[in-house]
Length: 489
Image (cartoon, rainbow, N blue to C red; front, side, top):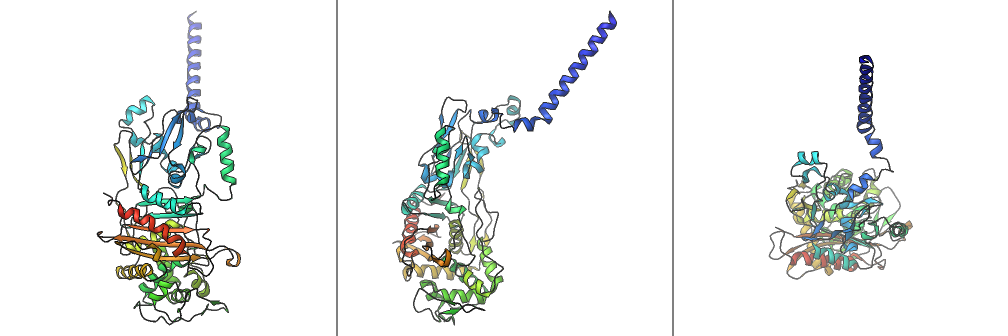
């Protein structure tokens, strides 16, 4: 009898060991496979069991959460969705997250360990912290001015505070309402298909994810390279530039859309956007100097994040002299996002120092306690301070004497550069209208804002420098809103 009991006890122990081994196998080794199985709905159910944290603009939430009383309980909502879509992105139960909803998902969903005041207790309880909030750098008045200025036209606006890198406006049109993608009903799938099939691409964030030929606005970079390299010293001396200009090593002539460009001074060429002068300056400066200037401003940088990723702006460094001439006037393979061109204007305004742009001021817990802040960001010296001072003078002349008069603001110094970027097969497409600028109020110690505007469907006459007529008024409206607001801090 005792022997049978011992056998039974040993068998029970063996069963217990087998059970423990199987449980460990399932929970430790097989956990990733089961957890990542698409049929497993428990992570999704847990994710949507509590309201998502808020994204704030100007101290006001532009997002929310709606209780649907369904299995995936809380659904994302948006206030002024089309206005802020290039900032927030969307948070969809079917299609995931984008932009700030993606890059700050850990905070917004409550999964960031920094949100828990007592992390050890949270580990024992298995609970999740309430979603935290993301405070953006966006100026709501500037954002609205940019959005209204573009109207129904296709284009984008980016505005930066030069001394800090804070992004004050980020607009892309046409836009869309992220609320259409929030839930999991059939209407969400229909909206997804409709938005993706729309030839106007409303979900494309043109401010940071679309690159354009920058046209004559790139002449700011070329002027910086030429001044730093000593190719030109005096802004008012003739530049020994023929008009038209024979592209080196070719039989192709480059012409101007402005008058009096032959042998023009740098000041006149900048004010009236003489292609021949800047093409020759780029060639005279050389590939190395042009590359150093472009990359100093941020071109060819594949790691820009604000915090979500930004498409790299490009300056081709494997070019012959003819291609370099075209690159130096913002054509050939030169491409830039509106955010990149706002960074160019900001560096000029900030004495030649470029600050990395950022969109998140701080993140907080639901009760308002700070989780993280943007902190100070190191500046990059793009050009000599004396070069920056000369460029500020040239950009101010564009507004007071040249093609950028529509950006002038009473009671402020405004610097700008117009651009008309040709594109398409044989340059047959409607030119893109560009304007980059900065503004400093008469009572301000330093420039308060730098802006870049691009309008794709400007409907300009081929002979016009359309950036001044189409894009400059939009930049002016944005700059006015920033100048009329109290300084940050």
